[in-house]
Length: 406
Ligand SMILES: Cc1ncc(COP(=O)(O)O)c(C=O)c1O
Image 1 (cartoon, rainbow, N blue to C red):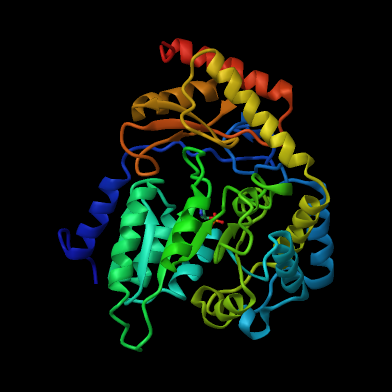
Image 2: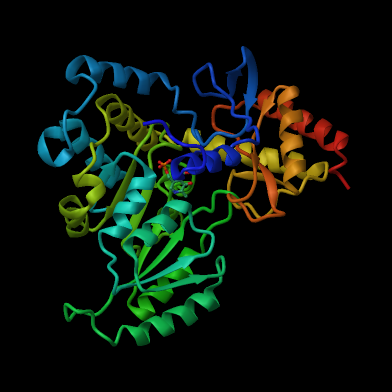
């Protein structure tokens, strides 16, 4: 039956159409990931990927993936809980646990999935969550799904507010859940805040958690491969092994492939393996991804050279940008935001960069608050000094042309 104009379905589609009229510039990459990307047939200096260590196109990872395909094929045939757990999954999880100095690890197909699993599996309606205001969308979504009736959002990195929240939560915990047990209190924070590059004050969070008997969870998506010895992450950076209950990571940034994982105490990981819906009802990592990831962990264990190069490159960029007056915000990591303020300016800035051979996308609302638009510049271990100098001179030119420099 033909739809009549104005019926409910037609109204739905016209709403959708209205929402997508503004054109978006979305680069289609015609090359592998690296210091340069080919976009519309032209090489562009890549200053906005999260391929922090340059592993996404690494020969060892590629070889490991193709060898694994020869041996095991590509797919896993079912969810991990049925026949889909390959020996490679077990090896990857063992290596990840060892790398993170944790008792156990569980790998899933994304950092988003890992956050969903980590939170939704242990938090129920009668539990209490306390979360940093700038936590990643996947944490926010996971808390929404878990639906705790009591949740607190403290201002970004505000430890006084966190203490206040914990005091209130401790009072609320006196009322037991309907199963007779006390509600859990879970404090959740990103480790590195990806848009600003600043760090969670994890030592203070852990101290407060210990004082108020709360559980702690850190999303280390931007800390792995970046912070700590050989890139073991933020817990290692602050020397907090054994004092953070749940570490979530992504395998799609520094590790160069895709996937996510949770590390923690053996029994907690086993609990997730038996109960996490994201693990039970969705297939695991594919064979080539898993094999490439094993190689990535081996590379990180063997040498910290890439991590060091990433930091040198980040420090160099910040120094050069500051020298001609660009505002790089409060970053404590190689993430180098160039703060521009208005969205239109950030969009225009990015367009001009691209015209001059540099690819770095604008970051705007809802990824950052309104009026805080920026270009999130991301050097990697794959860049050499010549690449960075080219980037610096193009940023300088565009900043002058757009009168961004005071
Ligand atoms: C802080 C943070 N957590 C989780 C994720 C999700 O990771 P993935 O892309 O592996 O799903 C991201 C990715 O953007 C992130 O920045």
